[in-house]
Length: 297
Image (cartoon, rainbow, N blue to C red; front, side, top):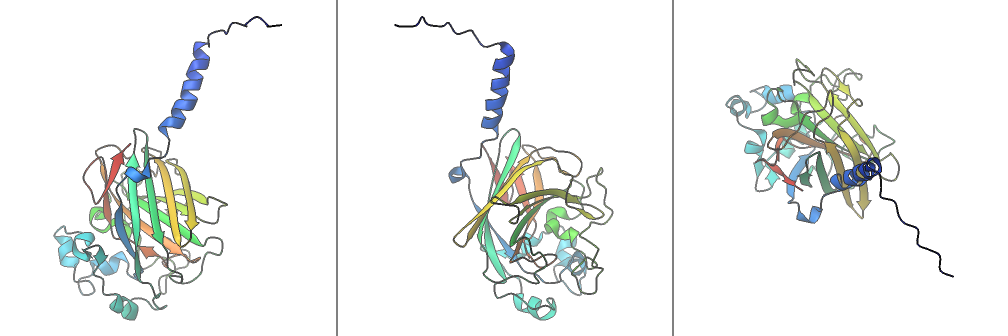
C-alpha cells in the first residue's frame, strides 16, 4: 500500500543562512587548481656564516656599494636561473663546519589568492645529505617563509637577511640563547618579519607554526596561517601554505595589488639554526608585478 507523500516544509531563513555559510566558506577556501598557476624557480643556497653585518661591510662584500644605491641582491646575484655566488669562497672562508656536497638547489614556487586567502606551494628535491649539524631530532624537514613588515629597512633589497645577525645562536662564538631578530624592531610600526613554517614531525601532514621576528623570534601567536601541509613522494617534497590575507599582531597585512618582500628557508636532514638553505629576497606580487606573481583564483 502506497503511503501518502509527506509535504516538505521550506527551510527557515536561519537554517538556509547557516548552510550557505558552511558550504560557502568551504568553497571560498578551496585549494587552487595548481596546474593553472605559473611556477617560478627560486634558488636556495647554503651560505655559511654570512650575516647582515657581513653583507653591509664593504671590505667583505663588494656589493655593499650597490646596496647603498638601491640595488637588490637578486638583481646582482641571480643569473639565468642560477646564483653566481662564489661557493668555493664560502666553503673556505665562511663555513667553519664544512660545506655540504650540494651547495644549492631550486625550489619551485607557486602563489595564488582569492578574496580572503593567499596560497603558497613549494616543491623541491632536497639533497640526500644534511646541510649542517643535526640540531632538531624531531623534524627531518622544516620549510619557512618570511614576509617583511611595511617599514622594515632594506627588506625589498635583501629579503629576510635582516633577521640574520652575527650574534645569533649557532653563529661562531655567539650566545646559544640568542635568536633571529631585527634592529629597532617595532611590531606596531611595521618593523618586523612575519614567519610561517611547516614541520615534518607533526604527524601525517606535518605541523604548522605561525610567529614573527621582531626584537626576538617568536614561534607562536600569529593568527593568519590557516593550514600548512607537506608530503614527500619519492625524492620530491611539496609544501602548501594557506594564509588569510589579514591576521593579527605579528601578521603582515596582505591585499590585492600589494607587493611584499619574502624569503624562503629549507632545513633538511634534521638541521636547525643557521644550518639551512636560504633564498635571496624576492618580491611577491598579489595581483601585481613581482618576482613571484600570485594568480587570482
